[in-house]
Length: 523
Ligand code: NOJ
Image 1: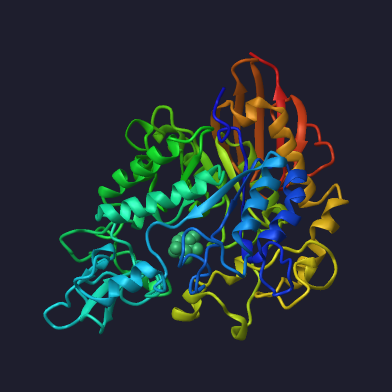
Image 2 (image 1 turned 90 degrees about the vertical axis):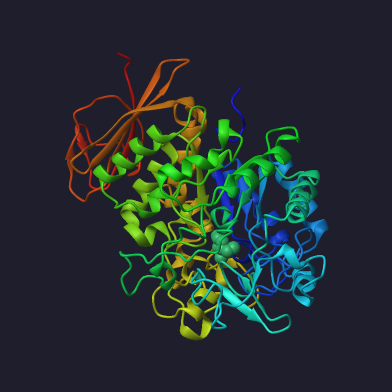
């Protein structure tokens, strides 16, 4: 039997924007429980919940002030226990966000660390003397704009932060830090979680010799200022691998295959290292390459072939169309192609992750300047880097604020999103939601899709095609995706199982933007 996560579909919940239960305008854990049946009806197997730990919310929960509790805005630990029980009762697995690279600056560890140069927690973070001119020790840049070093007058040294100054980096070279952070994994595993999505893993360790990062010759104005430098000395350092292996040993000690997913935006060849030596690393290093590949048949076919070919022996693939950090897929490629993309995501070989709202075809929501929340947008305004547009609340019903809250939502819902609510789409067989449900049901029915092999990945003009095969039964499926707006001739016959266009396919034709799954005769 393959492990559960290989045949599974994961759904990401961004808890601030999923469902509010107490009218404060921010989603919470009881809200998630109240909406679990949406996930059951959708047909996913696991829910990954972005951070809900106590946090000053400088980065909306990715600045953790206590790894082993729940922020009051999201509820209490008892609500978490209730969530796990409710999810498991529905056979939904629960995956938490684990943020090992940094903490909040309000975390007691950092408070102790910054208090004195000689305190026992000083070395838990990355402190360095100023450069001879008094400036930062290196040229390293923060992902969210400005230098990655902040001077702390209390002790006269700089501390390093890959992200905000309110997110100081932990020093993973310190064994005490490793022990403390591995204990966090055990805390939640003991409470019954089924796995973790590990945040920003490629940032975990920096060059010990403090060498500068080289300039990026490809940077052009308008791109994130952090990209002015190549992150040769601050990302993907060799020591990251031993830390991942240590996390994996912790998860391996628990029964039932607790899943470890790594967040690392890396080229394919480097990403593969994150499966670990003889696969002792992440079960699934997130594959974000569909986010950056031009939405055309040839580049996507090439990506699939390259990614599949690069997988180490025994490694299981995975695919992603979006998350709480990236422009929503329907905005990137348009409403028509978002349907084709859904078919791609759910018929490729590997574990797919759906970002909340993708199943409704939600688009990015323009945020008025006075409602901007994301610190990235505030620090580097005007470049379109802000992530608020992709984090707006889920519309559940037609009513005020889409049924998300009885109060004022922390971010506005899209005006057009109310019409796209779950309730509105649930009764419409032509809706995006209906397509997602049908795709997930098909995936459940067809072992060739959930666990089969993939072959014959090719682009023919604007049509992307590939086959999925269930070796045990010989069942063969052909997936045809028209990534263009023109009708295409169809040279293969077979039994149509599902079209993105709902109505039965036109014989011998692939309609504009149509995706089709056919069962084909063996041989
Ligand atoms: C990646 C997370 O997805 C993002 O939302 C966050 O801001 C950074 N890591 C820092 O934790």
